[in-house]
Length: 98
Image (cartoon, rainbow, N blue to C red; front, side, top):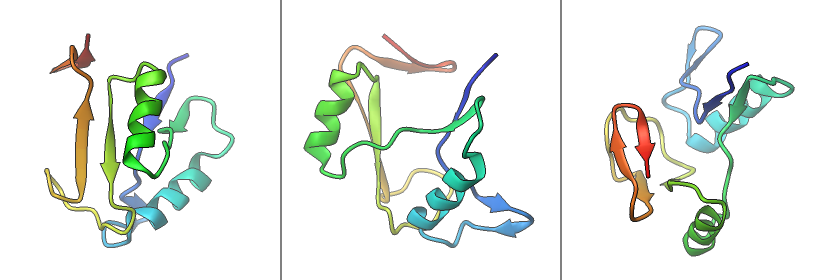
């Protein structure tokens, strides 16, 4: 059975949530998928960037995405979030590969 990782919810019950801060959207997402076995929220790392990076490296993650918890959703790349990946990983159409 496949497992899907989700990191945000933009609409819920017909209501557009994009204008809400990420912190609030994440809380709604976690409540929405609580108890699910095939849909899980992405793991949260430490709020301190250096601690989060150390955790990501220790766990063997390809990288991490840092986001401002107060940011509203804006389509495309913005200064509200930053993707950092470990050396040796490359991104292709299927995601990250070592």
